[in-house]
Length: 103
Image (cartoon, rainbow, N blue to C red; front, top):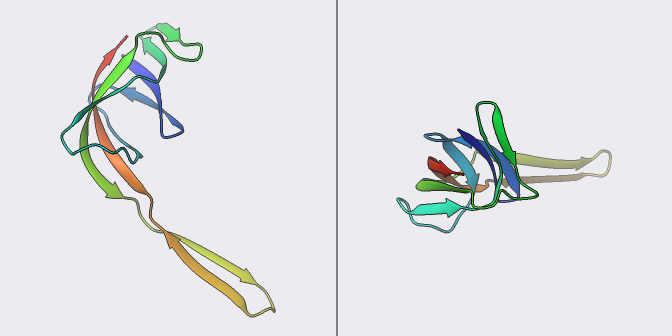
């Protein structure tokens, strides 16, 4: 069984037992959270598509860890103008383990 969920402005296809890095969620490590924005649930050939959400469907997951992604380097330059700008960014994430999908 799999589901398509929406969290942090992005959509993810998940199945039970999968680990997933999503935008940071304010929850303690080891806490169990429920994601109720389920867009689609499928099992084999049968697929339930919501309009926009599947009624009554939830995905239960456990917070495994919090962390930061690798650094992204931003470099801006204007040729012949003696202008250069260096900048870096590291986005925070929360790692989740998908426990159950309830349709």
